[in-house]
Length: 387
Ligand SMILES: C[S@@+](CC[C@H](N)C(=O)[O-])C[C@H]1O[C@@H](n2cnc3c(N)ncnc32)[C@H](O)[C@@H]1O
Figure 1 (cartoon, protein in one colour):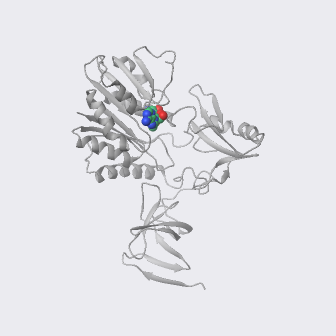
Figure 2: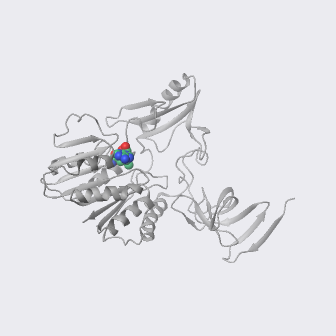
Figure 3: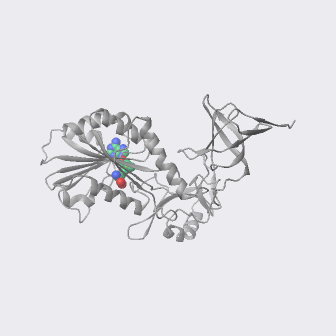
């Protein structure tokens, strides 16, 4: 039986109930990306693909005591802030979930999300606080991972492995979109469903890796312009002295430290995927160590380094230092590191690491935020800490 009724809930939001759906007004955007509302009981409801000011019909698909997850069924009144998503696959593709929000709102939400993550762990913003939103908000990704089957090529749907075929990707670099039809044709000759990682090299050439582990070619920041800003910030922030040593931990292939080579006596870049042979042009005082960070620090702790002080860059994966925090913090203190830059792409994990450093008598001197991922809720944060 279908029925409909209207009532006012205690927060004053008018609410229709029709079958198992409810009507909500979206008040805000959560930093995870969903619109935020409250249901009749005052419980927070998160609704993906909505904008502040939308009036929407929603079905509750997951319930916790303090919050619920809603599925958008219908937009009843569209918010004036809403913009037309540029990609026809928006909503079905699992990629960029914020195309319906203007970039200014995307950035404001990300930046205040990081500030909230810091305040939750009781950290005040230092006086040196920089925001670096992106200028290039489309066609920026230098690497994408495509899926395909026969002549269909595209991305996985949100939360599933279903293929969403697309003819281009609006956040991918133009070089990748130019290669799309060739990729489709090459993929259609493969006997089974496939994945292909496509990257634009620094020379502009396209590199394809078929059916390999994700990140087969090693880690690379995906937004080159924003990456340049992060490198500059580090270069301008970190103490530079030709007598000092720099440890670039979780350093990949030296993205954040290669440009600093002339400014340090020695640089040690440690990463599982560091180059096993020093690439041509890299000076001999720049050392790559293809190793686990914890293991390398344990192995190196008694080594003598030239010394007018030591700095470190820590750029761990998404989960931050997590349960390796104490091991790594103690090791870098034993090695007399007195200044470090902590970089992180998950605001909560990063803020937790920063707060743990502060509790162990490090002082927060500067914070900077960088948008490496326009059209998505993700953000990169960096902190300078001194001992
Ligand atoms: C966020 S990326 C940063 C890479 C680099 N800083 C850059 O800007 O390109 C994290 C890196 O941590 C490396 N990694 C993850 N766990 C590691 C571990 N326990 N020991 C060494 N490297 C690790 C990965 O290989 C990856 O290159």
